[in-house]
Length: 184
Image (cartoon, rainbow, N blue to C red):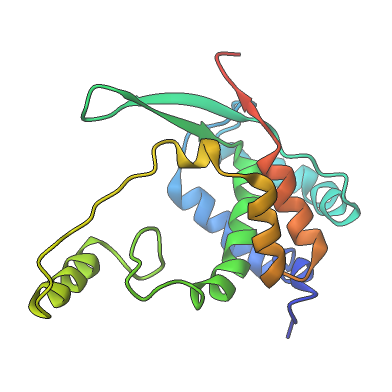
């Protein structure tokens, strides 16, 4: 059992890291700035797992900048994506697996986007319930480039209210400051 002040140990536990590895491999995403593929991750971890964990534990780990990729949107504009290295995705997934159960209870029950065990069909059923309750107006909004403009200091402050393990908050802050590599 881990309390909220010892989340880092839970993140770095072998069982959690193994689950994170399987999730990253299962997604089979593109390589980041180091061009390492998901297929190469196992051999990299075989040689470097101990030094990776040590660098995370002693605070010397530095996430790599994300690789900037543009994909077309339906309206003709481009959506900017950041592709992390597979090693950074592994660490991010390990963090995500531990923090998601903690943060889930804080979200509105009417929130469906990017939530575990919730999808488009759940959102449609929720909308139907609202319509059946007699509501007739819908407000739809999209915060353009939200993740490019969110105030990182405020985000870390809000995160720190719930996450009491400063090592976890510090690591997330490093990811927020890791930067972007655009066309080399």
